[in-house]
Length: 219
Ligand SMILES: Nc1ncnc2c1ncn2[C@@H]1O[C@H](COP(=O)(O)OP(=O)(O)OP(=O)(O)O)[C@@H](O)[C@H]1O
Image (cartoon, rainbow, N blue to C red; front, top):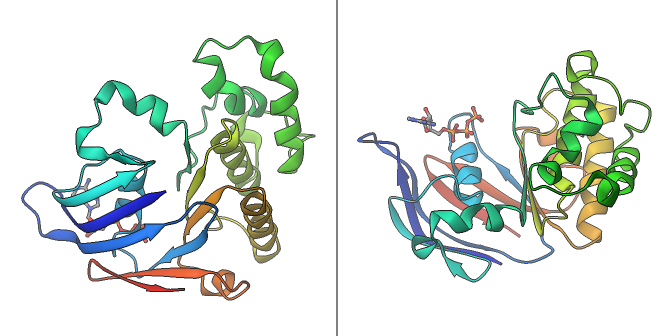
């Protein structure tokens, strides 16, 4: 589904942050992306989300060479990729329900065509009772789950999550991990960027470890 071949990335004239990355992310796979702070996890997620271009190398996503993708096509391709940002990026003046429905609303979909799906998804992430609340009232873990629901509303083929358990306690982290595993069983590929060793130790999943800009993979 995703293939990187000798990819390198530098910001401006700075040093290479990512070097010689060659790997695949297969359909329906589940992996952790880890490494010390500053190793380049967020940068790699941005490449996977098509919000950065590599400075060298070749990336194929959904059978497309990303160097040849017209910028106008990006929104359509990005719909196939769900992303949960480290800082959630919820809009404070919209309710939880409206935040999750927003990607559909901006595309001009009629509310009657998605209302039930949004409610079902909110129930699935455990926010059935918090649908009409504004984000500033939500706890850190609830915001996290609202951001996950928003990333999933378009039924992406791959979910990218940046430190999704960074702001929650251990029981909730386990619950979120179960949610990601359930999603993966339903067919979505999952990439979780995390520092959290205890989270990774809970399941026997592939580990992509970044260090000094290079990547080692333990299947
Ligand atoms: N927009 C940018 N411009 C210049 N340098 C950047 C930019 N974004 C990140 N960097 C640098 O790239 C390197 C990798 O950063 P990145 O945020 O990808 O690491 P990370 O592994 O996600 O870190 P953390 O675990 O602390 O979130 C760091 O040295 C960082 O300072």
